[in-house]
Length: 205
Image 1: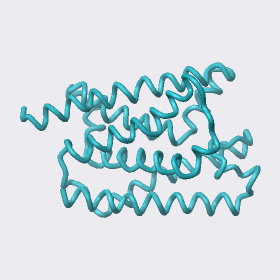
Image 2: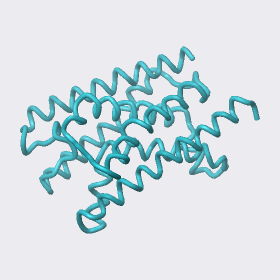
Image 3: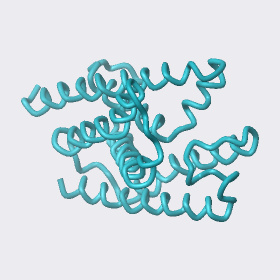
């Protein structure tokens, strides 16, 4: 194993060691708010959670070093690129739009800062500096759009039933479908533009 690969594996352990406990802490904090099944569905209905879960699976699969087929899936360059893109969008949208609307305290503050800042910085450092590059294609930026697209579809479908939305800018009850679709489109455009930038970075590196 090369020195670079050894550092990459070590850093994967660090990323996983931050992401998984942060996810578990956030889940534990939410468990006090209602029945376990209902809370679990709500927990998995946040893009923050899904993007961090993706990062945790990617880093965890690298950290284990096993050759199980399930682990190899998460080591593919497209999945790693999607994780980098998703966690970047999570960080940017939270920092620019959402942070001022939430004021967590204590353990909730630790989970909040870990999921929105620590994990994104650690994962992007790992992806940019230590992982191999050059396998992505421009079409991957379009393929990656399926992830936020499915999230938006689930959010609107679930919201129509339970009248609950994960983020204020997606709250149809307060803003109406016109404004929410515009907001969602803006985030989708950000996802696509950043996806193209990430592919360009990968090809350059």
